Length: 464
Image (cartoon, rainbow, N blue to C red; front, side, top):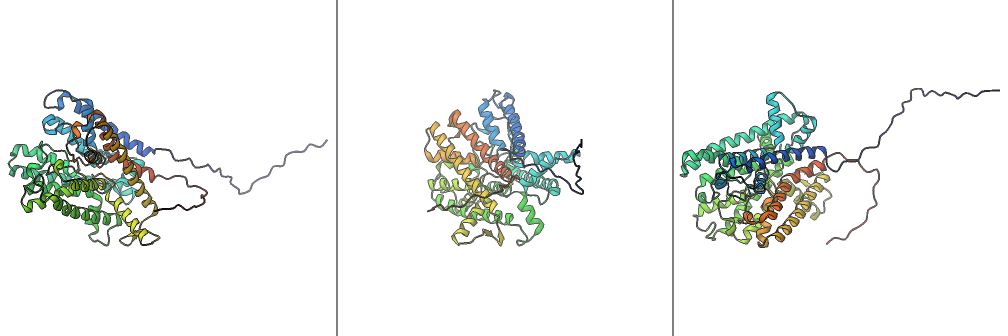
C-alpha cells in the first residue's frame, strides 16, 4: 500500500503581508476630548472659588449658577456679567476672574508648555500637534519655541499696557493707589479681549479721555490679531514675504476697523445719548474705539442700550466676525470671512480656483470655512429662539445678547442680569460654543480619516 505524503512547497523569497483595514475615525478625537477636559477642570475650579464667601465683598456665598456664569464668561474671555464686578467681588474674587481670563486668552496648554520648559519637562506629541495647529507653528520641532514666543508676546504687551493704563488712570483722577490694580486688570482684560472692568460703569466716564480709551483699543487690536501674524511680520519685514494667512488677517482687520469707525461715527454722530454730546475729535476717538471693541473685547465707552438700531445691527456683524484664528478673539474669525469672500468672487468671475494675493486656496479650507459659518448661524438661531421663549425682551436685544455670548464679546444692551436661570444657561452654552466650538471643529476636520475607495455618481441641483 502506497502512502501519499503532502508535498511541501517552499516560498523562496516571498513575504506574506497581512493588511489590516483602516479603523474608522471616531466621533470625537482624543485631542478634542483632552482639550475640553482640561478647560472643563479649570472651569470647575474657578466656579468653586467664585462661589465661596471669601470671594465677595459682602462675605456671603455666591449662587452656584452666578459663579458658574462668571467663571465661564472669564474663561471664555467674554465679559458678560450677571453681577457687578466691582461691587460684588472683592480683591480675591477679581484675582480669580483675572486668572481665568489669562488662562482662557492664552490657552492652558501654552501655559503648561512654558511651565514644563521651566522645570525641564516636555509635552507629548499629541499636545505639540494641537499647539502647532492652534498657533500655526511651521513644524512640529519648532512648536514649543514658537509657543514660548507667543507667551512672551502676550506678557510683554500686558506688562507695557498695565504700566500705561496705571499712568492713564492716575492722570484721569482715579487715584494712584487704585490705578495700580485697575491698570493691571484692564490691561489683561483688554489684551485677552475679555471686556471685564472694575470701574463699575465700564469706560463711559472716560469717553472724553483719549489717553485711557486708546491704549485699551491698541491692546484689543494686538490681542485680536494674535502673536503669529505680528511675529511673522517682524521676522520677514516684507509684505511680499508674508504668508497668505497673515496677509488676510492684516487686510481684513484693517478694513473692518476703518469701515467700522466710519459707520459708527456716521450713525451716532448726532445721537446725544452716545457720541452727540462729545467734541468732534472725541467722537472720532470713541467711534474708533467702538469699532475695535466688538471684535471681541466688550469694553464700551458709550451706553450700548441707547445706540441706534442701525448701529446695533452693524455691531452684530462685527461680533459675528471676531478676530484672527489663534488669537484671544472669538467669532468665526477674519480668515474665515476672507476665504468665503474670495470664494464668492471666484464663483462670480467664473474661475475654477479660489485665490487671494497670488496664492491658491485649497478646496478643503473653503469647505471648513463654510462649515464653521453655517454651524455658527444654526447655533445662533437656536439659542436666540430659546432665549426669546424664556424671556420677555424684544427680538433685537435678545439677538444682540446671544451674539455677544457666542462671539465672546461681552457687549450688552443691559438685559443679561435679568434673563433668569434658563436664560443664563442659554448664554453659558453660547459662550462655551463660541470659544471652543470653532477650535474643536478644526481639530476634528483636520484629523486623518479613511478615504473612500469609490465615488458616488454626480447629479445636478437647481440653485437660485
